[in-house]
Image: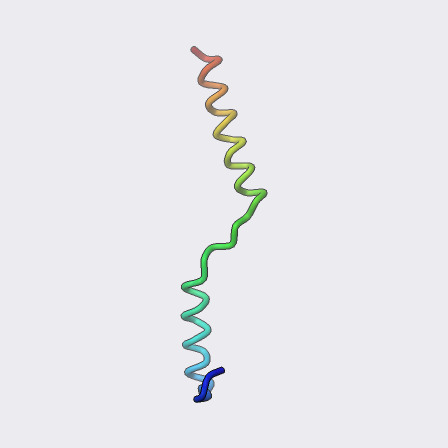
Length: 49
């Protein structure tokens, strides 16, 4: 921590702030599943025509 220590209330506020502002975790499996579903949907539409 920096020069000044935080009390428990301040520490909780900092933790809450960081949880709110951290980027969403990148999930590779979920991303691949999404791409696969889009591909299959596109493929299905082409075969329907």
